[in-house]
Length: 397
Image 1 (cartoon, rainbow, N blue to C red):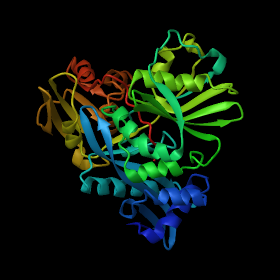
Image 2 (image 1 turned 90 degrees about the horizontal axis):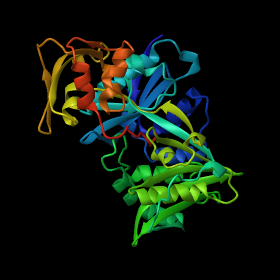
Image 3 (image 1 turned 120 degrees about the vertical axis):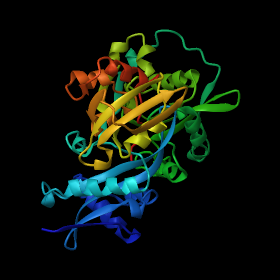
Image 4 (image 1 turned 90 degrees about the vertical axis):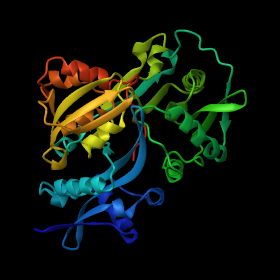
């Protein structure tokens, strides 16, 4: 069997989405097609063919993600699938190799994805870099421990106003929050068109939080039976955050409040009088792949000054397999090839895991995943790579 790979054209779009849906044992409605057409980028869509039959595909999108100290271009990888008739034949490996080489040629230092199965992507150099919490609480158990006074007021708004003000609120609220991505205009349109989120659905609602005439928080939610599901709750102030949560927690004719894709260090549980009643289901969220190790390490900031010599193991992308010296001094970072003895030996995937600051080197050392050559270097790495808060990977793609 000979498998050939090529990028897509716009004419391939319907087939790509059908193939992907079938690979995920799913289904694409016309609403799905219309929404995904907004963000589809043909020359970033890779297809695998057995003769004339498409048997696999993968997409990526160009995005901007907040990393420690700044913003990075990323390839947001999505829709990776191989048809059930052609699995276990190395097709996915070929697609991943082709895609990562393409991303490298675009000079994008990072690839980021959400994994349908956690067993798959480590073999291609991705590392589990952030976690999310899916939350659930009973309304009757949701009292705050202390009063969170607010001088502002939430207001229900129509979709037309939400489309106008949500992007501004979002941009302000996520600034410098590691893991969050900037939403371009087509992605905002995609979010409003997603099934279940459409404002025309009478069970879908939009709220803004306003203080002194300025909105600095918003909420989207749906209600099904007596269950309120928070789709998005974004705020740039504690007042907006606590008020919008309180609105959900006090909603009439509701018994259960749920929220998905919340940060691993969600502050809500520290605000509750009975925090154990907040049920948290933790799961991996973003998997990070350093496509260009030296560029990726040079572009982020570090919490303390210092230097580390790292031996990176990367047989999948051999240009990364070398010893590099990372230096951070007075807010300036650099990373270059080195002939020094390494302080730490680790795989590209484990370097991806620690990149956003959500996982520390000590955890990986204890798990037997990395090797400390120079005593104390892992503790130093923990300090250098640490961030004030856990990365929050809210957006899916």
